Amino acid sequence: MAEKPIEPIHQFQIHDYVPFGDIGGAHFAFTNSALLMVITVLVVSGILLIPTAAQRLVPTRGQLIAEQLFGFVRDMVESTAGHDAMKFFPLVFTLFTFILVSNWLGMLPYSFTVASHIIVTACLAVLVFLIVVIYGFARNGLKFFKLFVPSGIPWFIIWLVVPIEIISFLSRPVSHSLRLWGNMLAGHIVLKVFGGMVVGLASVGALGAVAAILPLGMAVALTGLEVLVGGLQAFVFAVLTCVYLHDAIHPGH
Amino acid sequence: MANPRDTKRPESGDDGTSPTGDLAARIARAQAERPKAVAQPADVGGTVSGANRAFRLASEFVAAIIVGAGLGYVIDLVAGTKPWAMVILLLLGFAAGVLNVVRSAAAMNAASAVPPGTPAMPDDDDD
Image 1 (cartoon, chains in turn green, brown):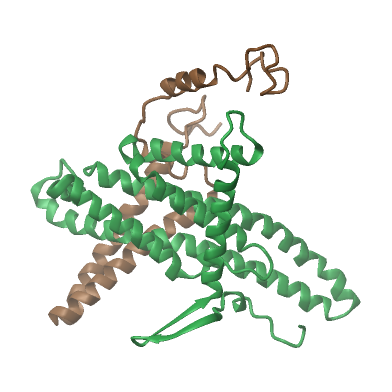
Image 2 (image 1 turned 180 degrees about the vertical axis):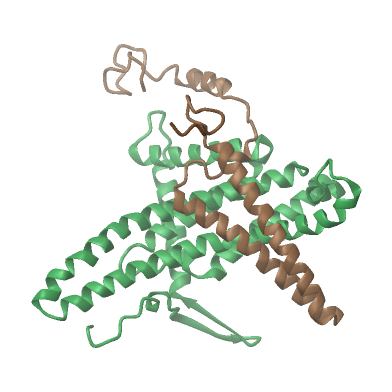
């Protein structure tokens, strides 16, 4: 352990478990990332389905957790995106629980943080973006373009404002995915750096072992912070999804 | 749950009337009292920490610049107008980034209520 150089980004490596071979030049395999996603879906399904299988008027503990989670996301969708957006509640609920549980599962030792790869968060953000665009056009038709033309702008400014608004709109999936990915990646790297300091100092000698208490304390504190960040980022991702859905339903600021 | 009648264990209604007998009616009443949905996208960031707000603003700014530059690069490749579309769209991307930041900051400010007793204007009397 001590001979190996400490690599803070080693934890993000993808390993193939079941390779499917190359299809059309692209490499397909069942990886550790995919395994964690499957486990996440199983955990979420288990938490929600098992306690609510036999619904009781006075809820059990498990049923209460499921109901509270449900109510929390429902209030978020209703207050942020409006009542018309409730048909997207399953989407927001799925995104929220998936990100939340995968972030928290990623905190376990020897686990893998799914959201630390930008392709995962980008896929989720692009999914939301495409739903907003497609549903926005389906519901509002060409009125959806009002999103890019703020009202009350003089004609000589409008040709400058519209491209800016379009770029601003197109930047949504980028910032949407960057935020979750950046938070998870940076947090786990910092955690590993402090963990590496503990190992490095402890291998020096008795004095080093005493000094290693300092980074160990930081690692403990950062672990708590990472749990908080994981929950917070799942919440922020879901809230922003609601905000974007609100724009799809009510274009025009 | 805060019903004073529910002092004994629930679901043990041995006096004939189950304590949860009128629960369906109570749920219906509570649902009727639920406030109608008010759209307030300004809620974003109201409950998040300072570092998270900072990261949010930074990512919105950077994202717009990346999109502007990337869009310009693609237009240059397609139209063969080598540097110009990228230059113009990069600048527009900066503008869009500022717009994003201003919008997010406004939403955050609207979400975080002003504490009562705060003067409307900063007090510039240095006494």
